[in-house]
Amino acid sequence: MGRGLEPIASGNVNFANLIFMENEARKVDCNFYEELELLSLRHKRCRIVFFNDGARSEIIDEIRDIYTREAREWLKAGSGLEIALDQLLEVDGKRPSWAC
Image (cartoon, rainbow, N blue to C red; front, side, top):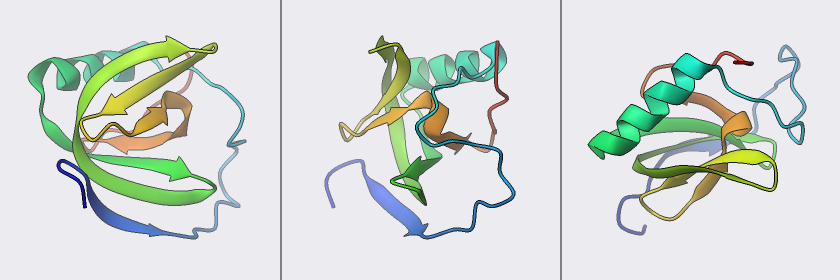
């Protein structure tokens, strides 16, 4: 694997109990967004759990940047992987709430 990208687990998960549309853009709450910014500033490696093509994926990496593109908020990991914030399930042990 490339530097900074360590897959932990990946696979199909039954998301029947989640009210979530993978392609639906949502905003994370302000407190979670601030946590992401702090992790980015500290260059801390952390566990990032997210949806990836309908499956749950996990990596351990640092957050290099948080930005907006095409009306969506994104996280750029140290490996270069880009993850839409509305696809995040957990970062550094914290789960997002939706809406600021």
